[in-house]
Image (cartoon, rainbow, N blue to C red; front, top):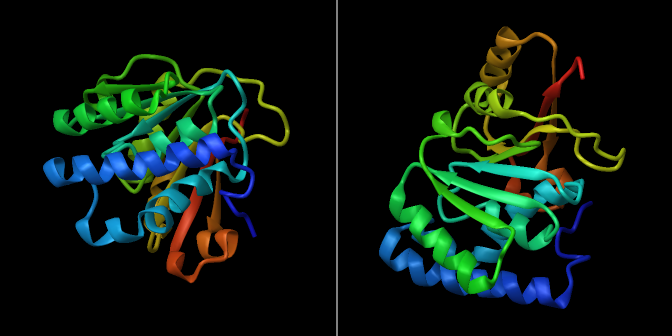
Length: 212
């Protein structure tokens, strides 16, 4: 079982607590997350997002969060991996405005919010992440269009798409393989990975080019 909070420093824990406080503040104005989930923010949102830290993102790598919303998972990842550059992309201006303010107040110099559609993004990235914002085939198209090579260590995530999804993914994975039969797709049930029944039917999905 993976505990995403186990190896956090005191400073990282304090930043996550400050993130919760800031998101509660901005949520009253911008509706960044569902109101009925705010009371259990650390469990429902932060633990969920930090499942992506099951394997590390290497120092110096570049991660883009497609459809970041209220900065999930971009902000927790930027806190957890201070030596990684994290871009938070969203087409909704008020959400990026909030994430930019949150990042500034938390002093996250490695977090870079960007307002625009994923199709318009042009900077190279090593990893794409997302939290149930689009079908897998769309997420992969956005990633592969700007993917840059990276020699990741064996213990780290291979470069590619790592995202959080829920429900039956049979159709989405079939669409991925129709797009590119060489793709390697892994599914990791979060109930097993995190040891929390609250995450039943939610999975971590990792997609990479099988030819790499």
